[in-house]
Structure formats: C-alpha cells, structure tokens
Image (tube, rainbow, N blue to C red):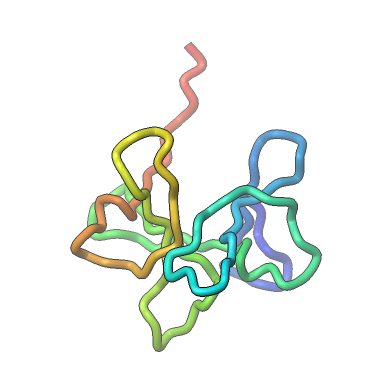
Length: 113
C-alpha cells in the first residue's frame, strides 16, 4: 500500500505487477454498491482509489474503508465480498454488523515453501 501524499491516513492499495494499477471503486450512475476493480492510478480526483483500515471487533481482522463518500455523518463504506466462490465480486457497501464476516479482512504472510 502507498499513502496518498496529500491525504494522511489514506493509502493506495497497489498490485505487485508493474502495471501501476491500484484498487479502485468503479463508479457507475445509480449503482448503490459499485464494484471494486484495479485501474491505473489517477493524477487527481482519487477518492475512489484511497483506503484506510478500520479495526473490527475480531482481533486481526480489518474493514477496508474507501475515502469515497467518507464523512463522519455517514456509515463508513467498506469492501464487501459478494458471494461464496473465488470468482464472486467485491463491492463498496455500508459497514454492517449483520454481515460483517463478508466485510472484514486479514493479512497473511506469503508462504515461500
């Protein structure tokens, strides 16, 4: 992850590939829960590409909050896994304690064995 220079506490989540792609909210008109995609890092207007970690009630697991529509008056918008298969998409959704298991993420070391 790389922090947005002018946005302390917010980070880019980038791929290890040499594409320069970062995790991005794909904004579409009228879509309540837009999909999460990888896209080239934008020079400006990058709220859709900045993220922060919010601790969950389960130790070692985090909500990944988008800066897009981030406002203290609103519920945080976080990444949510939409399904039970590897091909299921992730979307941007309001944080919900009812479905939090689909919204919290953990970090695991790379197994080099």
